[in-house]
Image (cartoon, rainbow, N blue to C red; front, side, top):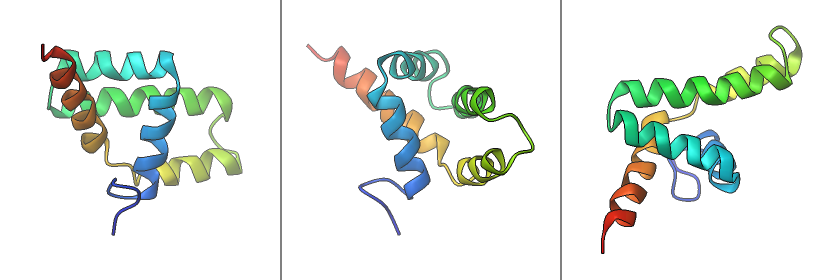
Length: 93
């Protein structure tokens, strides 16, 4: 079961937030460009998002636990691959 073209709602949420923030979008694009379609890209993107969430809600409170549960559902590879597709598209003349 998917959500708005993504594998699930958590993946869609994260992709939407990254895409709608120019700074985060650029960071995610750089991660995909640097690591390509490898687990290192997935891990780096996950660490970026988890780090931002931890800044807002330190570990241990209810919100951080809920965020952690939601982030565990994210298909990081799917998001990385969407950025890789954009890189290829942007490189076309």
